[in-house]
Length: 61
Picture (cartoon, rainbow, N blue to C red):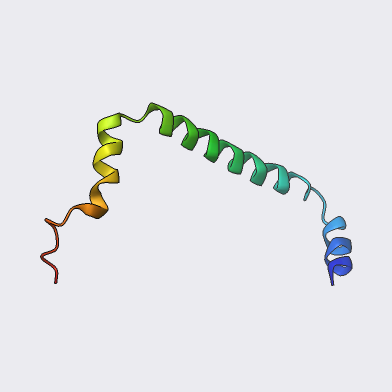
């Protein structure tokens, strides 16, 4: 099965760019996420981390 897919993919012109693009998107996403984590304000991180423990918004039940 993999041999069939590999032979099929080798016959498509210009397909080698897609793995490179997907790797770049993956890498850029995690670099931006890493930068956001280190530049986020401490008050915002504390507020968001306490959200699951906040019982004031339990009016749905």
